[in-house]
Length: 356
Image (cartoon, rainbow, N blue to C red; front, side, top):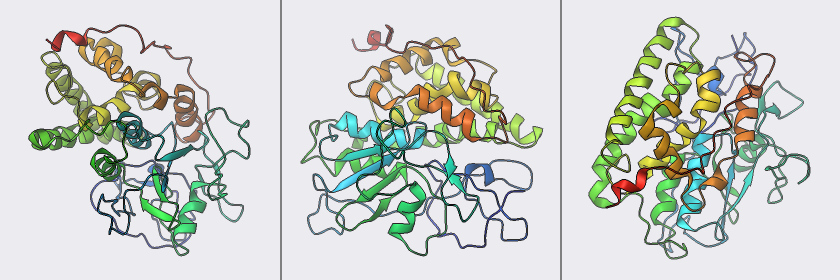
């Protein structure tokens, strides 16, 4: 059983939409999750715990965190679907000039010499790891160091994404579901694509409903399959996963997007799991009943989203594969990376048929 030195968890609200790091825990101390690998129930099922920083950026100038160009920085991992949700919104809304970002290395490493925690770290130079960069903003060696900089007594999980306030030198939010809502509307005065509304008022109820079952069955469902430690929880999770995928396939047989013929945040939230499905989740997380590319509508839909302006830059398949296969030794102890299919998501698709 993995555990860590005794600590208290700062409570958040709702399910967490972020990527956790990993720690070896001392069996004589309090058992508290500091990684997705730790978040297990007594029945052997994966149970994701809440995020911790839940502040909001507002367009109101008097806000503690006002929407300002150049003030905020996004720390991400290209491997993490939750972090890539946020980067996708930065790109789609045209905020990449207003909000800077830095990507960590894909494979977890020790974050301190004083304990066994392994997690997200930055390269020491810009040439060490293609696609990753040193933290030139705060000089941090790891995501953990950012949390400790934001709160000297912090002792929870060290997750990405991290939305950082350069002015106050603190974490605004580490909850991707909140961050994408901020990026969608609060920065419109400085966004290059302010008219793009991915959470339109007339579709809010439909989006929320889709998000709920997609999160439970697919986004989090693949993790419940992959991290299950007993057959029963795995069987339950994989059945729910494929029921949800089948439901998506049926919806997408009649509509271009998952909430109709309008692109919404629900599409981005679904896409980040789908783009990882065949290369990682099918093998690493035992989601092998049916491949994504065996679903005609889902497969073409994934290519459609991938080809939106800016979206391909959020997908680094090398980081994705190296992280999952190299950072979960309890699942893949030798760290061998399967060759994969090398699917070309930039190839033609048939989704335009719903545009007329």
